Image (cartoon, rainbow, N blue to C red; front, side, top):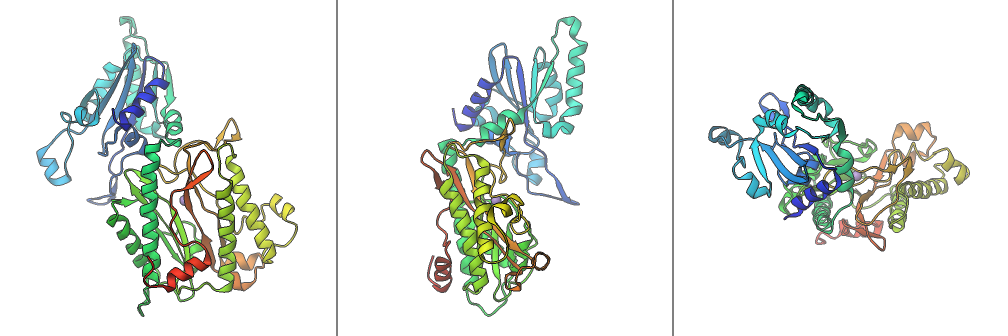
Length: 444
Ligand SMILES: [Mn+2]
């Protein structure tokens, strides 16, 4: 029994007898002409198998009290493997992945047609309905046709995501240690970004060069790929939330916003740092940075089991609103500004999200219409930000010294019995710490 088979056991224990669960790894996608995007298996499939090949389907069959894990996958093919890479193959799969049976993926439709006899409930991801629909239609109609032979047709289709997403939301201690590693590799990548920026070379530094430095550090430390496209945004580009072009030169006096995370053993790190390219914050940059950090620290201090999810954002929004009032960027009474969401033009995203195998990880934020309470083992990001583009600054009458500044500070946090454990700890975060790190060419 390994972590993957115990996850399957746990899923089996939650479904009723005579059920079938289908989980797909996904297929390779074309990027352009003969070039494919790097393949990355669907997270729920990887969660249950630890297997990363495309064109594979896991079938969990619970029938007459017996539980079987059956994998459909690509067969060994010497010719194809020379061109496209190695395959595990049908023969090796059961032993290697601790499964009961394996079949050629080409036989999926045919084999499931017989496995599904007398199965009452079929689970699959409703997000993949269009992919499953043709096969489901075939299976359901062939069962109906066998009714006179005494076959009881499936009568319930269920969303597998309901079960899988809830299971994935609460991390085991083994998962938390992998996530700590993902976050620590990510942290080291961010340090590498600060280091290349402080290098002091007379040449212009480009956003993609900072990206190269941090992603090289991820790989150097054992992360084979990024968890999502890295954002390296100089100056006003930081006001574009998902800026991934990373193609422009860093200007003297700009802040650099880096939002990047390493993937490690299938789990995502997700960190944002904001620092001055020349090593020294200007006064308006410093004021907005310190306000963002104050909001982030207030949220982290609040995290504990039982705290409602939306209290985190309310706390960040309140700190930012108060701060923007004291800087004269917002005018009025804090309570009524909060009621009007007056902070939204400057802080337009949420304060965080679940983190796990997916960077924006699965799991409901509300249950029965109510914000859910934090539980031990949940992992989330805390990432307030303040963005004042020239357009917004002009429109809202903000003093021009604050225009074209975008700041976000993000860490990865696991909810523990006593509060919060910051998995991504290790970066210089205060203005003094960042300026000292940027000034000392030997600091690491
Ligand atoms: Mn994030």
